[in-house]
Image (cartoon, rainbow, N blue to C red):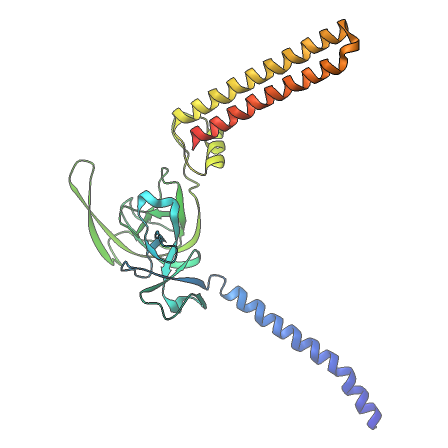
Length: 282
């Protein structure tokens, strides 16, 4: 009987160990799924910040400040409370510390400057520093998509007056709306008017920004001229080389060398046209 008990215990030990391992892995998996956005980086700031503000890095890379429209491409993330993240990175002893995240579902300050914010709308920065709004087609960067509504008539946190193009004042309200944060290029940005969509997408892919139609067409002209010149030089060099080779087969090494040099010149001209086009786009 004693031998049987020992065998039973030995047989059940691996099973219990497996069950314990599976339970532990399940707990880790659950924790990672339950709080995928629960990481925030701590920064110091000399500006008054509050949870929900959209921020960017200051000249000092360890500090943040409210984002403004002129620096939209420097969008870093959103300020959240320290209790809103399971993991916070940064010194807990720093004064005026702000915790910033750029991923997950968090409350964001938005205004009705560009109209009411509705679920699914893309959010970008407004004329109010640190406050978002419904993105139009001209803003290049978006913070993410709204997961709630803000009409501007309820759940108001504050209000401000903005200057209109006519010299008057426009009153706007702002409040908190949950936003699924994922900073990216604005999918509604169709680029400047007057150029085909594929050219707009190509230039945006190359430069990560919208480019005026004038610069796009100037770039296209330079590239086409570079192609024509390069092809003409290479074609003429190869054609003349073949004719010379037929007339004087004994000089084939010299002729082949001449053809190669001509081809390299054509390639260099094309490369220079691409470099010039890129500088114009930038």
